[in-house]
Length: 231
Image (tube, helix red, strand yellow):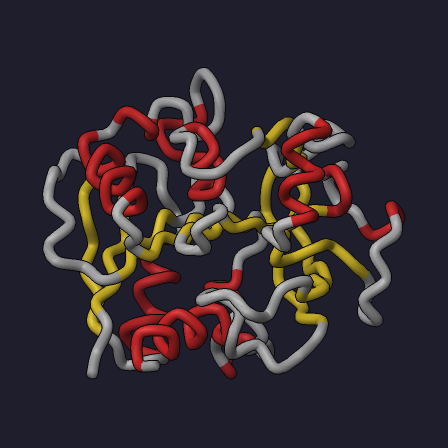
């Protein structure tokens, strides 16, 4: 059984081919690019909103992409239980589309941050994390607007419902402010919706999913998605 991944391509996307390579070449799954002006998801089982700078990040990150014809289809797909993962800019599109709560603000430092970080796996029972064997993984980040913010009630709800999947940490899983690269509340790096079918994360698992990169920690995110369909 092969799963078909649809990778959305916006003007300014730059991680679309990375995501395609992981699922098509590394995992031997079906994959297809979906242009932002399309209004057909082409029978894809999983939708990937990749990293980049959709529409040049004008207005706000993800704000214009949210109105693309393809995103209207993604919203309907997600609301009907379809599996959607948004990475970096894709996470920003998901919050702008109200598929996930909160907003992503400028990094606390106001500077673009590009480096490897450690992520503590807070919830390994999701369709995006079920195959992650480690309690901490190392994944690169590259963003200027990764500071996750939401009001107190939303944060409490996310924490109480176990919707925080990834949290910035050190290599041992300690989550103090010292290991927070952007100022995100509670060191939040990735969350799911209440239904568990939509994940948004700022770090880039597609950039650490191959032996040639000397880091395969990220591939387990995509393996988890595939495994969930096979169950």
